[in-house]
Amino acid sequence: MCRIRSLVVIQLRVGGEPVSLLSCSYCDRRWWQGIDGLVALGSVLGLAAAASGGSASRASGAG
Ligand SMILES: [Zn+2]
Image (cartoon, rainbow, N blue to C red):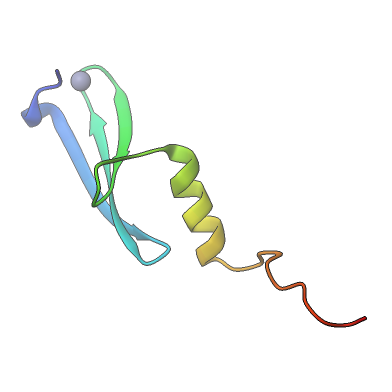
């Protein structure tokens, strides 16, 4: 287990949801943590992509 004192916590918001990037200077590991707990990097990137817009979600009508 990583030592709390060696952890660097960076709090930021991705897609409107608060997430924390924890970085351990001891073993050089990084992971994301959200409200519910650990967050996969893919989920964070997904939220970031959704937040920045440009999603191909709107595809209705026009026939
Ligand atoms: Zn560590």
